[in-house]
Each structure stands twice: as structure tokens, then as C-alpha cells.
Amino acid sequence: MIRLDKYLADMGMGTRSELKKMIRSGRVQIDGVPAKKPEEKVDIASQTVTLDGKAVAYQKVEYYMLHKPAGVVSATKDKKEKTVLDLIGGQKRKDLFPVGRLDKDTEGLLLITNDGDMAHRLLAPGKHVDKVYFARIDGKVTNEDVIQFSEGVDIGDGDLTLPARLEILTSAEESEILLTIQEGRFHQVKRMFEAVGKKVTYLKRMSMGSLVLDENLKKGEYRPLTKEELEKLC
Ligand code: URA
Image 1 (cartoon, rainbow, N blue to C red):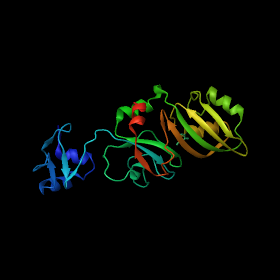
Image 2: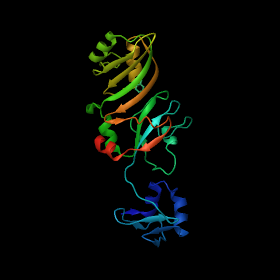
Image 3: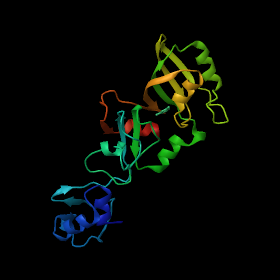
Image 4: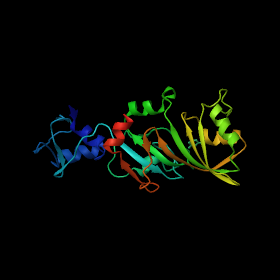
């Protein structure tokens, strides 16, 4: 059971004070009966809440795949910068957050959820979840780099990075690569390439565990995870 105003606030229907007014003015019904007070209790498993005649389903956990564009920060709030949550429009839960961080200039897959357990399963250092990045590198990426990355690189943290899989797609003045890492250290991909004397000029996350960026999503677009994606992630 959950308070009616919390139910509606969780589903992004308004602030508590706005909702109070909506409820008191008879716009909200529980099982077809106009609610009178914000503190009325709703059984989320069996009751139906409507606002202005439209059903408002209660979802405890939500999961969105965002194609993060460059230029937004991976935070829930920021005084100056646009955040990834500013891109999740419409009615949204107040407790959504991005699972892990991508740098402001990094693009690609970002999972947005309010499921803390799921975030922990994906991010905890001991879990070793694969993260695959596509990158453009200023410089010629070589087989020596492949070997070095597979053995671990000193990026100045005291301990080497875990073995990482570097796949060279093109190698010239500018190279294109795929890199699979199982950690999420600060600026990790950029620092790994710096450690071998090269610079990342473009970075995009392609996947995280079983979750693969949907290339139908344009930069800045998002969609709920499908049932299959969610089952695999769990
Ligand atoms: N590694 C980086 O250097 N930046 C990111 O945004 C993600 C991984």
C-alpha cells in the first residue's frame, strides 16, 4: 500500500503540492471512485488510479536505454550543464539515475534506471562486466598496444588495469578500434591510450554486459528496455 500523492509523484504526475490540489479538486479516482485526500492508500497490485480519466500505472522500477550525445554530463542534476536526465522527457520518476558515468564528450550506451541493485550488479568492481567502446585514436595503434592492453597498463593508479581486449579496425595516422574493458576507472579508455602515447579523439560506448546500444536510437534518444534485454541483464 502506498499513499496516493506518493503514487502519483513517483510516476511523475506533479509535485506533492500540485497533486494535493488535483486530488482535492476531484481529478483523481481510485477504482472509479473520486479520491478525497492525498494520504489515501492505494494497493499498487490490485487498484487502478486515474487522473483526468486516464489510467496511471505504477511501475516500481524503470529502465531506459539512452544514446548519450556528446555535450551532456552523466549526472542527475547540474547547476550549469545539461544532464543525461534532462534528455529523459515526459513524466519520469524522480529517482532515476545513470548507471555509471560517461565523460561529457563520450557518446553511446547509457542505462538509466531507479534500480539500485541492478546498478550495483553492473558496476561493482568484482563483477567484471564487459564494456565495449569504439574509439578513434590519433596515432597508429599497433599489435604491441594489443599485447600491452591484454597484460594490463599502468595508468598511474598504483595497480595495472585488468587485461583488456583491443581490436584494431583500421590502423593508420588515425586508427579505429574496439576496446573491451571490465572496469570503470575514471577516464579509463583515454588514460589507457595515453599510457601508450596516443590520444582518443572520439569515444562511444557500444555495450555493457549483455546490453547493446540500439543503433536505431539517434543521439539523445532513449527507449525503455525490452523484456528480453531486461531478462538478460538480470
Ligand atoms: N573511458 C573514458 O575515458 N571515458 C569514458 O567516458 C568512458 C570510458
